[in-house]
Amino acid sequence: MTTATAETELTPEPPQAAEPTGARGVPEIVRRRLATLENWLNPHSWAVTLLVVVIGAILRFQNLGQPKGYIFDEVYYPTDAWDLIHHGVEWDEKTNGPAYVVHPPLGKWLIALGELIFGNKELGWRFPAAVAGTLMILILIRVAYRLFHSVLLAGTAGLLMALDGFQLVLSRTSLLDIFIGLFVLASFAAILLDRDHYRRRLLRALEDGYAPGKTASIPRIVPWWLLVAGVLFGMACGVKWSALFFLPFFGVLILAWRWQARRSAGIQQPIVAGIFGDIGWGIVTVWVALFTYLSTWTGWFVTNTGYFRHYREANGLSEPPVIGALRNLWHYHVEAFNFHSGLTERHVYQSWPWQWLLLGRPVAFYWNNSGNCGAPSCAREILLLGTPILWWSFLPALAALIWFGIARRDWRAWAILVPLLGGILPWFYYAVKDGRTMFSFYVLPALPFLILAVVYVLGAIMTPSTGVVSGKGRSDRQLIGTVVAGAYVVLVALCFAYFHPIFVGQLISYESWSSRMWLGGRWI
Image 1 (tube, rainbow, N blue to C red):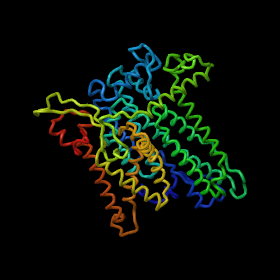
Image 2: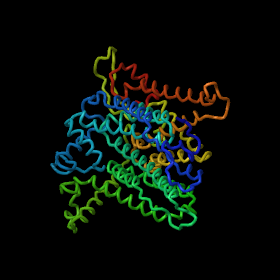
Image 3: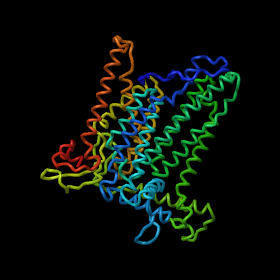
Image 4: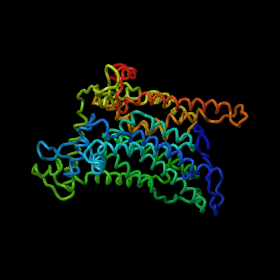
């Protein structure tokens, strides 16, 4: 097991299986450059995955039905989900007609699944969020294992997410953001698998006699995982439109990885060669995502009672089958976009993107000072707050990630950095341009990549060097780096344990609660 992450990954761990027979003189350097991680079934990696996922699940499902009643924006989404069950669309009980909502329905349909199983109560509407939060931990571990080829670092990535209060609170609350976070991360995982698939197919073509210098065309490769990514990305957009921010950034990664793979295979003009295939499959993938997105509106299409469902007919315009429904849905989207663009109403817990990673303004989801805690005054709060030691290490890790990406040209650094920017930079644009109302939970889809940045740096700290080797066969630098990384993870765990009461709404003394308000009024 290797913990090196700072080195350029052109020679990953050798595949466990023997080289395929029939290889036709492919140069070893080309084989190494196109090689991919083949030990997905490593039992140690799955044992660590299972252990960390169980820890994360316990934290997310324990006492999930508490506190009672709706907390924060649960006043909207669980009720919308219950309406979907009974009407197929969101419903306004006051007017006994369709309700006007400004988010797509998929996240609410997922909440509705929990309500169908457990009923219209706290456990029912929070259960799907806990499942989504736990699945994020699972996927992050497997993504980290693919990137770093290290069971230790993969487990660390999952553990840091399991011990993050920000992700924990959103996993225990019936909001939409945990679902968009899940589908964006799953889309990235599929894109990463597509990279491996593309490189493996190029290597197989070389082994079967494909000669780049003698053949004008390149091998035809069906990007199955890219199509899967299209489905997952369409589902992310079906939760919230802000998933679209990631589209150009994912596109850049896909193209760059394909060009790099063709160059490694020895194909002349790797950007021009295959460009029509890249564009063609890109268009197909976008259509797959669009079809998936439209399918999340099935209830709106088939019930004929959704808001704006017959907008054109009601306004004396032609409304032919199918096309008319799509044009009505387009009008709905235009109206919803205008609503989001003009949302500048001040809110006590709003915050700006430059405050998010600094925990400048967390959101209070729940507050109650009643009950007996054995002290003169008590407090019970759920505060959407990231585990401070973890979150305050994001910016240094981001700076280090950029340095490694430039200085060492490590593709993994860019694989983490590019989608991370996609999850944060667009919010800066809208904050400056429109000054629209924003909240810290908008950054949730970028959280997995922030954690991967931290783990990347931890791996770089533990990278073996050529220095003095100890009697145990390990360099002094690696030993010190391992101790430092281990101490960091322990500090994060202790910090999480300290703040845990205000992540889950535990009744504590007012004095204990006040001692956790490290930034004073900014956290109150």
